[in-house]
Image (cartoon, rainbow, N blue to C red; front, side, top):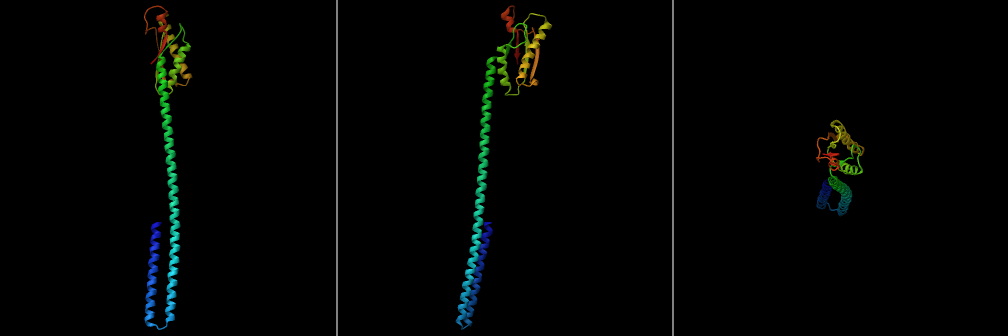
Length: 222
């Protein structure tokens, strides 16, 4: 638009000057051939009128071009302000997202540290597959850590040496399933949890007596 206005303005000035030159040339010829100065005076007036009309026309064009330039500058400023606002909003959203991700990562590290602190072995009473209060608190810590990742776990059920092999395999399975069911009830999907029973076959403490038996009545999380 600016280029168009400049071109129009130049054209008006050029035409004005060309018309002025024509008038002047006619004026000179008439002076040379005419003895009537009244005509000269009339030509002078015509020349002045032509000049004023040209100036008025040029002024109108310049004013229109100036108005267009102002509108274009205002439109450009508005567009720049809108773009800056959009960029600022995007930057704020990105910063908020990064902050949220950092907070989530920190919370996950704390949950995993708490789960590691309570250990991965949950103990049971004699001939029981019910979670004790202590075992439930341990499992809660692991549930919190597992909810922040996609890891799968394996629950291995064990018993002490008392009872038949078949009975102890079934008891070990019930114990592993009890931990699994508690995890599922608290939000972990069952497909991430595998259970297996070893019965009395993999003791960690050998020999008779409650101190050894108590260590073997367990579920291990792997």
